[in-house]
Image 1 (spheres, helix red, strand yellow):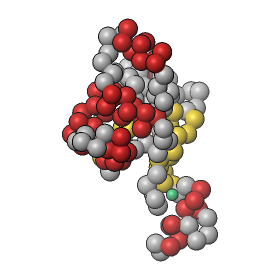
Image 2 (image 1 turned 90 degrees about the vertical axis):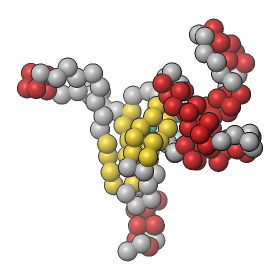
Image 3 (image 1 turned 30 degrees about the vertical axis):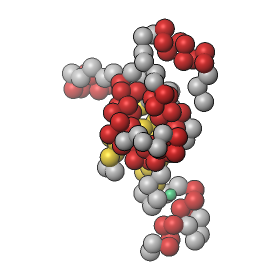
Length: 145
Ligand SMILES: [Zn+2]
Ligand SMILES: [Zn+2]
């Protein structure tokens, strides 16, 4: 939930945080599931019944461009992340959920620029496997066998 104080701060920074944008931001920040636009749309529609998926999507992209959210391209499409701090992700191959993983302190390979001539500004590690639920006997992955 965004307080009136933080809304004032956003106004001071010259950003328009309309009611739909505030609700969209609330929805993404309230979940750690790295939702798709369609998921956010379903949640937002409970509070704004006449909102369109296109409006939700456009606002998600704008909020991400302004640094309120992170966005990540995924095989399943664009996902949105309320956690804008540095972190890596673990994707469960059985159920598709994405969890945050703390980023290691040493994020870049210092030898890379010397080897390739690239200036490295950021680095991301993606983990894939089975989540806690899917590893359990009788979990989703064993049922699909
Ligand atoms: Zn899983
Ligand atoms: Zn994340």
